[in-house]
Length: 229
Image (cartoon, rainbow, N blue to C red; front, side, top):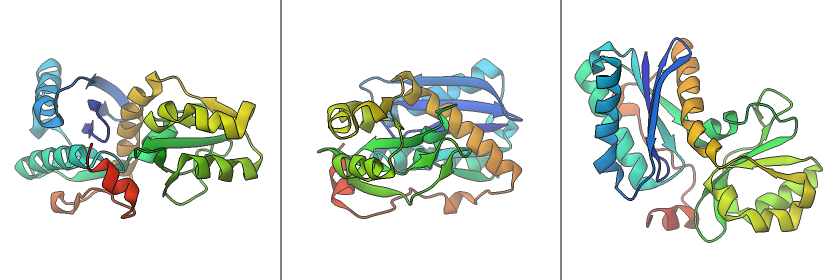
């Protein structure tokens, strides 16, 4: 069993996966900080499932990109659980989790994590080729990302909080080639993160707790803006 947490956005989530099947999933999207709501979510998970941290095979965290304060809180929490139980950790990309939350789409899948001022963290995945990642991770203006996609001449689906807040910019550039996931999909990305964690665990792609760190792939103005969130 693997406990996976996601604090990369204002939504805090806890997911328990057992041999590839989701056993428990809960989230909170309120005005409380992650330091206030994460541990109660984890405690409720263990209480409801009648389990303890020692019952886990590993602990996973979405490590970014995203809210830098949230990531630090989530990672520190998972490190503490892993240290105390002597279990391994697993790092999951927020962009990968968002992309894999789109079950079936034969165009491009574009996760957008809001970085304020019409900028976003992103990468592009090929939905017609098993979610193959076809670009490096990037921190760019949403306008530039949309213009890059227009050059590819393929329809694209956008997912994540950056897609919601920059909807009009994307439509202005891509028109009918732009599609948007339902907002609920941003919540189900945590389940995708748990499934990715299961795959990593099965492939022995684990870390010592001390090596679980936030993923800051570029030191850009986007990062500086997100640090204020």
